[in-house]
Image 1: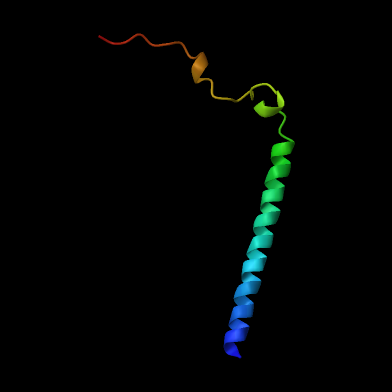
Image 2: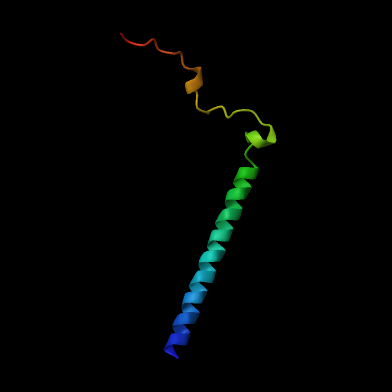
Length: 62
């Protein structure tokens, strides 16, 4: 009987973990969908994007 209860508790914890992960993934997808600077949807670059390509090139020392 104790083994049956243990198996049930473990299965319930796994189901609860799956539910939490599913909810977090849905929340993350909603955030991504509302992000206006997505390149795959034809948006522009993010204003705070990596600006290293705009830095002037340094002359080599020597």
